[in-house]
Length: 91
Length: 91
DNA sequence: TTAACGTTTAACCTAATTGTTAAATGTATT
DNA sequence: AATACATTTAACAATTAGGTTAAACGTTAA
Image (cartoon, rainbow over all chains, first blue to last red; front, side):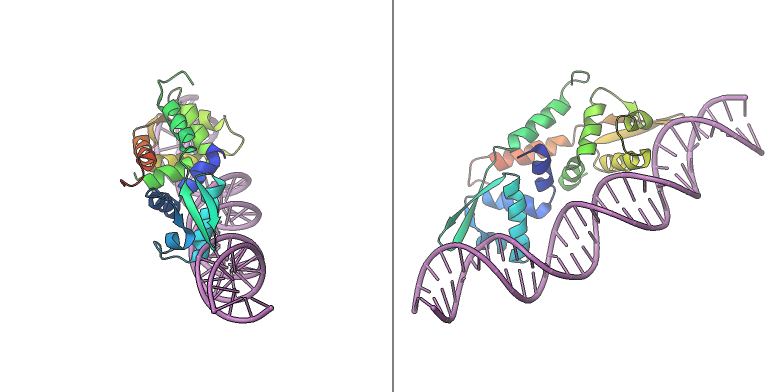
């Protein structure tokens, strides 16, 4: 919901890997967990952080919860970086 | 030096503010400190993190140490984000 | 309604981060 | 050489983050 949340979410390698995995499409929490060596509880919390940053969306389908990427908030980071790289002087 | 370092450095609001300040040009450590309410020691460590991430460069001039922005590593973040935003399926 | 499955939440532990003050370092000035 | 100034480093306290196991929750199936 904010640049702070977004950057904090992206600062963890596991969370970035989760996003990369979701690039190929929506996936259940369990399937995401199977890509890692940490416990499901740990991944679940990473998912919560990503969701709070609005980088992923979830939807329950029966006993599964599917996660999918939401890249729209990445726009803000791009803007922030672009601005930082702009010519010196005009901030 | 790595995407991990860069994103971790950017995940702190004070460090982002330091970068924004340096956008207008090089500045001594003391002048940077004066923009914040935390101690010089604290800012000094933030500067060290930014430097380790290669987001800033320093050079001593007499008793002052000047810091300046180095935006080249931001390219990697842009690339990573662009790739994530790419069409689903081709990772 | 009980059992099984997928997932999250709670409680706990350890490690990392951020801040402070005090000491150390490097440079300039007298 | 002694002092002063700018900055960093060390040592410590408080907070946050990420991992684990165990319990709880929500859904499905028997």
